[in-house]
Length: 290
Image 1 (cartoon, rainbow, N blue to C red):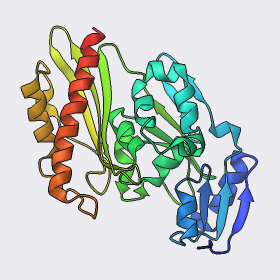
Image 2 (cartoon, helix red, strand yellow; image 1 turned 180 degrees about the vertical axis):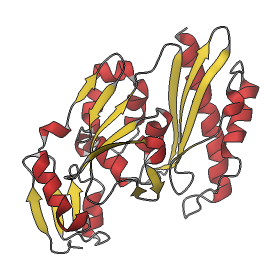
Image 3 (cartoon, one colour; image 1 turned 90 degrees about the horizontal axis):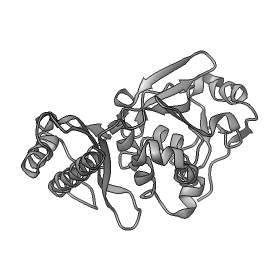
Image 4 (cartoon, rainbow, N blue to C red; image 1 turned 90 degrees about the vertical axis):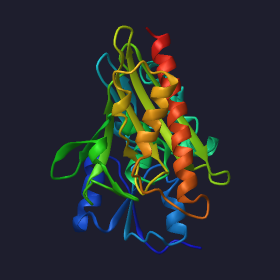
C-alpha cells in the first residue's frame, strides 16, 4: 500500500523538531529517525499522521558518553553504534548482548534505541533490558523537560508515559557495579525475530552474603514489558533450587499473551525457562567477577 498524504519536516535543530511536533498539541505529528517500525505502519496506513518530523540528522540526539557513575546514550543512537562502542560494552555489557538479538544487519544499521523505547512494542528486546538496568529516560518538549524511570514509562501495548508533544532525548543508566552480572535470554518468533518471550536479568553477588540484589524483566510475555518479582532470590546462595523458585515466583499470577504464535500456557513455560537461564548466567558472571 501507499502511505496517506502527509506533511514532511526535516528538523535541523532540536528546537525546530520540538516546535514541529508541538504544533496542534502534538496529536497530529509523528517522529521518524530510523523508521524501522514506523515506515511499515505508514505503508499499511495503520498510522496516518498529518505531519512527519524527521530527526535523523540531529547530532545532539546521538552519541554515547560513559563515565564512572553514569552512561548517557542519545535517543537517536543506532544499534550499530551501540555494538561498536567498546566503552559501552565494558560498562553495560547487557546492552550489547540484547542488541545482537535485534533484527538483521539492516535494522541494526538504521534502527535507534530511542525509537524502540518510544515505540514500546510489547515484544521488543530493548525494553526488558531498560527495566532490568533501572534506566531513566529524559523527555523534552517545547514547554519543559522531565525524567521518567523505565519502570514508570511503559503503560501498555505501544503506550508510554510520553505526552504527545514530547521527544525522548536521551537514556541514562548506571554502569554495572562490582560483583554484578547480567544476561538476556530470548525465544524468538522465527519469521519476525521478535521475542515470544525475552528475559533480562541483573544480579549482584557478595562472597559473604550471597545474592544481595536481583532484577528480572520480561518482554513478549504480557501486554507490556514488566519487572518481575524475584525477592525469594535475595539472600540465597544463587544455587539452582533458589533460581528455580525465583523463576516460578516471577511468573506467578501473570496474564500471559496468547496469539497465533504461542498460547498463554506455552509463553508462561518459556518465561520460566528463560528466567532460569538468564538468572543462572547472570549469577555465574557475577561470581566470576568476585
